[in-house]
Picture 1 (cartoon, rainbow, N blue to C red):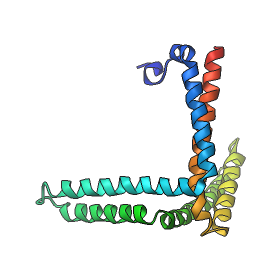
Picture 2: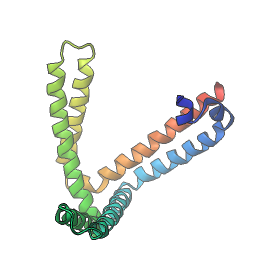
Picture 3: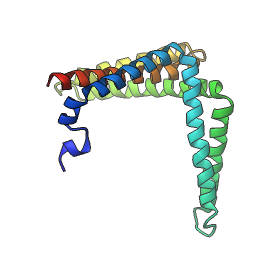
Picture 4: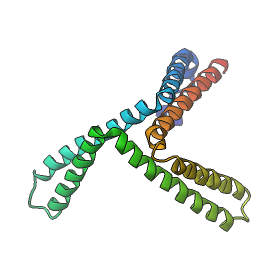
Length: 183
């Protein structure tokens, strides 16, 4: 199987580059909008996660009752209830949930940064070990900065991250379309 069948072919990119440019432009605008309204973006993102968890919990609950005789019935029902409860909480209290999730993100970044720094020193004989060290220091610093401003940072961090991701995806699409146009 060629890579062209899995992705957009170069010929398609060359002939339809303007559509990718337009998509990239829209994504850049949406990213800027998401960053500008980071608190709203955080709430909406958390609510979407809540919808996913609530929906999967309800489906899991009904699925568990199709065969009540199997060994995993009780665990399946408990997991379904957990998904429903967490999903409902995310929908009912999206900003409180965003604050809680941001604390988890901060803890993850701090621990991830520490582990990357340790790993970098363990592989010091490797060529680019310092890149792992740099990534570890950046992760650690970001986690500490988020934590230092927590709980207020919990209102906007998720929205900022989503906005940055959409913005960078848009720029990527624009640059891809311009490269395809020149090819």
